[in-house]
Image 1 (cartoon, one colour):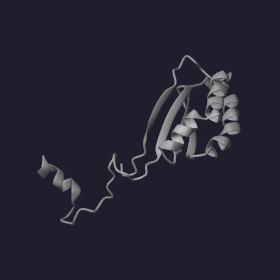
Image 2 (spheres, helix red, strand yellow):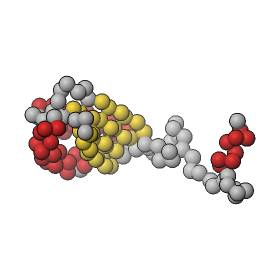
Image 3 (tube, one colour):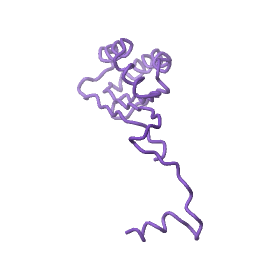
Image 4 (cartoon, helix red, strand yellow):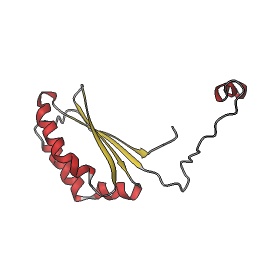
Length: 129
């Protein structure tokens, strides 16, 4: 198996290019990502878009938030993709009254579709993948 992998690492006899190594358990600072999706009624897209536009700047400006992006899926889901500067910032955001109010407002919004269970992924960003 090692012989089969070797050609993929080199072309035409050139030496393999050095790659920056990233160990998951290293002391290298890591940003934390949170991807979450909530059900929405697509027939109320305009109301949802207005709500997101009204919240986006405040979300992006929250302490520790490196970036936040929003997307809508054709199956009726609002995706929110956060990147936090570090684990402590992520924890502080999730425990903040700002986040609790934001989530409560979203779950009470007329465009929210509670029949679609929210989905969430939280992890460390892997810059070398």
